[in-house]
Amino acid sequence: MTQTTESAARDDDRRTASADAPRRSSRPRVHRAWIVAAVTFVTIIGGAAFNSLPGLLINPLHEKFGWSFGEISLAVSIDMALYGLTAPFAAALMDRFGIRRVVVVALSAVATGALASVWMTASWQLMLYWGLLVGLGTGSMGMAFSATVTNRWFVARRGLVTGILTAAGASGQLVFLPLCAWIVDEHGWRPASVTVALAALVVVPFVWLLMRDHPADVGLAPYGGAYVEKPAPATGAASRTVRVLFEAARTGPFWLLAGSFAICGASTNGLVGTHFVPSAMDHGMEITAAASLLAVIGIFDIIGTIFSGLLTDRFDARRLLAVYYALRGISLLFLPMLLAPSVHPPMIFFIVFYGLDWVATVPPTLALCREHYGEDSAIVFGWVLASHQVGAALVAFLGGVARDVFGSYDVVWIASGALCASAALMALVIRRKPADGAPKGAAVG
Image (tube, rainbow, N blue to C red):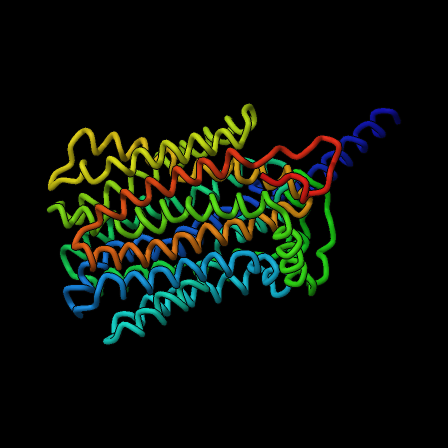
């Protein structure tokens, strides 16, 4: 009897194990959050492909249509300004309509703008396609996109995922700058524009099929967290975004942070990102060589940002910003003397040095936003980021005008060095917020 009972028990165990096996094997080995993060990474690269294009096409468009450098740069500046002004509202759009829908529309806008430019014949069309369509599209896939994905899908590893997605923009630059430069050099500017449009369109099916707005859509908990129900579509996020702006605008630190970050954008995206390649070509450098140097900046940009984050945890963010802006200004003052037909060691040193400083300003700027604005810091940083893009837009335009007036970019590099010096001073006069929680407006520099 005992043996019979034991045998039956073993049979039951085997049946139970057999029944459980399919359930265990059916569990996904990779959490869906990582798939969503991978799609986000590829999407940012696809959307960022256009950012590699304007600097490469300034000279070809000038030669083809006779448009002035100022006219072409105005289209780039509209794109940058709309990117910045769209960013604070992008998260609100995603809360209201869903990540997937917003991103698909944004990619379609970028692809349409890039593709339509192939048939343009007037400069106002360039401003419509490059400026309006691409600006709204890329602005909807900026930092708000990666932040929304990270916050919804991850509880653990948020820092890692944020760093990876931040690197996507630099990775896109690394991939598309040399590729587009080669296409422009060998086949002309139109195939390069088509390539960028296709890069955006190729990503659309992956977003639609693999992206989900919330873990609850597929019955999962966020990675490293507990299951939560999907919230109802938010309707007041946009009004809160505007309200926080008006509140922050009454305080001194906001204007100092926004002003210094505007200079940051002016001395990176607006100046070097837009005008480095045509300036190098003015000195006889091949377009592929100049684009490759700009792409290498993206490598050291990643390293510099990570290292800056570590320094921000240990040192005064204001002093770090002052050092970053001062060193950037000094390096830009030397750039006119380094430009030459060929790449030489001093230019390589500039690329490495400048690349480490490219977006090293982000971690300390974000830390100061958190210090002064607490739970509203993410929204305040969104507006500070908007000022970054407005500064970039202004200098992208003025840089082209200066090239038309003076015949070279030398005066632009010198002026940017002076601007960086003023940004360093602005960072230093931001006062630390009192530990006793004094009103935000008390911390005025």
